[in-house]
Image 1 (spheres, rainbow, N blue to C red):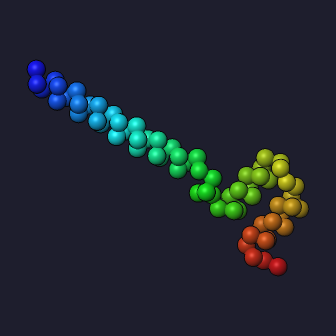
Image 2 (image 1 turned 45 degrees about the vertical axis):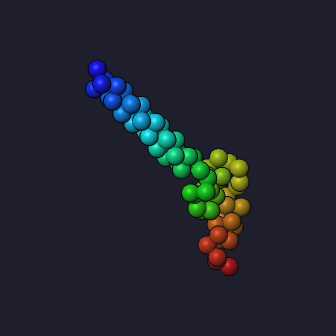
Image 3 (image 1 turned 60 degrees about the horizontal axis):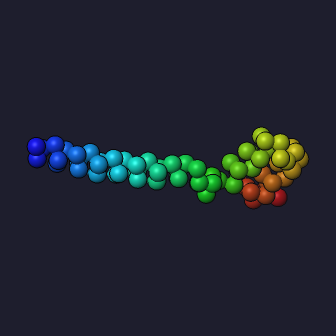
Length: 66
C-alpha cells in the first residue's frame, strides 16, 4: 500500500516539473526578443506592412551601410 502512495507523489511531482519546463520553453519560443532586427524586418515585408523600397532602406540602416 505504501508503494502506491510513494508512486502517486512521484507522478505528481514529475507532472509539475514537466508542466513548468513546458511553460518556460513555450515562452522562449513566443518571445519577440529572440528575433534579430533583420528577421523582424523580413516578417514585416512578407506581411505587406512595408514596400520594397522601405524594406531595402531599412535593411541598409540595420546593417550600417550608407
